[in-house]
Length: 443
Image (cartoon, rainbow, N blue to C red):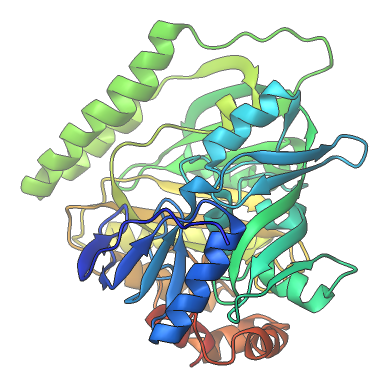
């Protein structure tokens, strides 16, 4: 068995990217192969320690916390095999999305859809149900064709729609509860360009046309700025074959995405945190300062936005046609309370899928995400949004802040009991458990 490359530590403090969750680890391991992963799992079980694989720590919940052994899978990175005829690529589980995007681009390929952050590892993104926007496209989990996992007894297994299909259905979005994913086979498509059109619009005009925009664009999303009646819309559509790329000028990309969206935005959020009464005028200025832009670039360059300003986030999925009602109720709450919200509210869409724990399971979905600057108090904002979400049939994103427990999810997901049955089969001793999983799945 390969020698595991690892740093052995005891009682080390760890927190996630946003600082919303923290723990103390018994030790950290950095396996370089599937054999190393299996060895670490077996040793942890022998010592009575629990195990969790970690990606980039971008989840806002405690889904990846452990008080035992943290497996950092950065050594398991890269595309291993490619089947262009079937449109499939097999990828090591620790591959960061930005690395995967670059490797696929070199092969003339791309993922059909992406979220707006690419710092996560592929296993972390799949494990919590990361998605982008597009009413005819599923989240990343919908494109999984096969998996390799190390189970609690140290054995390695493969699953697919034809090979142990129940494990496959559960593990596509498995919350890290079933084992450690080491390889993923994903659906890929020929590389493509997107025509991006971004512009500010009145919020009510956006809500009145939201169904048409979701249906008529390959990818549609918008951001509402609380304490204002303004929104920023983004319409991204595939271009015809042979269309030339027309990326943003370097100065414009630097001005918009680095200076304004990151450096200046960090300064503004520090200001409103120290002086909350400045939030409304700052939001009004920011919303009015929005300008339109239009360009054509590679899909991942359009989908992904650099985000250096840290925040905490809650996101819920709803039946698609609930979006306008939910957002109007949220706006009414913000307008009627004293809490100052400096981050925009993000709204997106997704096609239905058949992944057991997917927030878009068997329904066309819209997503609404609320944020706060990481230095601010959580306040009542997230709780108010959650109450609205429950009233409209919402399902919370597994990697973003919420307070729901197993009984809620049993009612929300028709295949929840099937997922638990698979978990009982492959991890009866809960080697991969933690407090978050105890809450959302049951002990």
